[in-house]
Length: 287
Image (cartoon, rainbow, N blue to C red; front, side, top):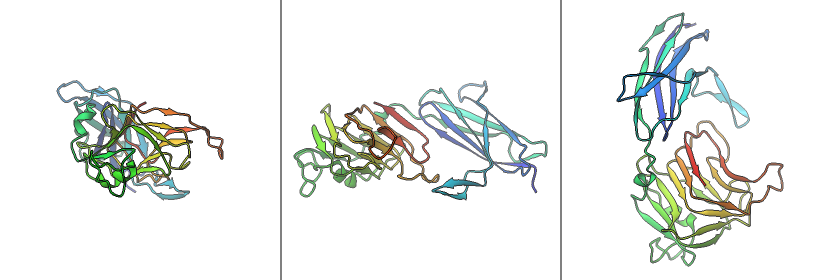
């Protein structure tokens, strides 16, 4: 049995005004180590004591009705909240164990929060267009010969930074829209209206109670200024089930509205506007 603690890695996961902190270790079989997290502006010398950290020592976790190995065990975790966007921060985690510490202590790292200027990481790839009078068979996705459906455009917009522009109109859904290709931290995939044209997805037929009108199952996706009407679920972010290893993060839903929603007839649960599934690191909504 190794009762002493060996420090391992410090993982820092930034959003726009928060940082997720994960400090891994080895050993401590008797489970008595502790950890303290501190942070500061990289430009400052004053350290601030952060929130109390929580430890995960579970060997297995529940997944899909069964137990599986916990990939993230032996980890102290916390979040740093209320930070400034696009700013560099230093973070350190100091371990204590009466049975002894080996390895670097504290373990330290530096990370910058993300920029909240979303336009700066959008609209910098190829452009694809969708219109009511478009054609999924003969259209090329250009402004002159657009596609008829967002789903068709989504199968073509596969590179980071690509943008799908949807022209004015009411699009009656016959199946759910699945966004399975995402972008990157510097080049988001964007689905939005064209200029200021009003766009509505009509889900009155309730095309999928499980997936909703739109399912976003990719990272670094921006869904903007598109309204949804009808149905029992509008937007699902993440997988249809919830395996811990599937992480959907950095999805932005903004400027959208939901109208004429209805309660799920086969369930006591109310209407779901946005459902976040899987293990999400950052999810931003402005509706």
